[in-house]
Image 1 (tube, rainbow, N blue to C red):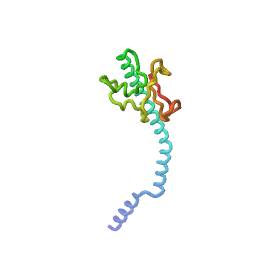
Image 2: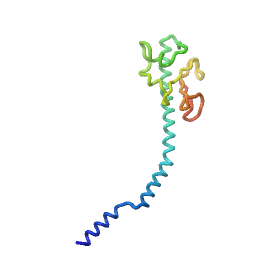
Image 3: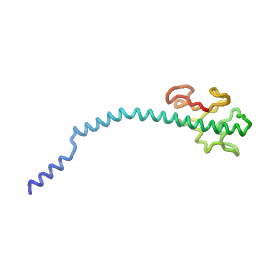
Image 4: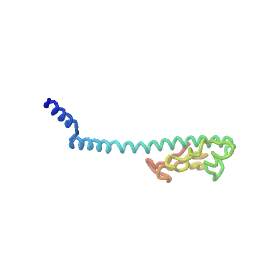
Length: 141
């Protein structure tokens, strides 16, 4: 009987982790985090670039519809929000669609630098013209 209770105590104490096992697990988790985290954060920038390109293309389509309804002309000096959200005819569902993933409004350039009639531009993460990676400008159509 005494022999049985001693084995129970040993089996319970044998279940605990040693400090070496804990340190090994923490080191492995640290190495995995160091290897994986940069890849994940790099994907966030790529995702924002994709969303900006998609939104800029949708805005460009809305601008084309506006031009069709207004004899092919774009007003000078008017913001995208005033043009696409104002008046009886709305060309966009909500004004949030006119903001890029970095929180800046898309810019309408008339006449366009890349395209003849207009460009819809997001200046990227740096909010300035030019750049590479996350800072790269998105120009549509």
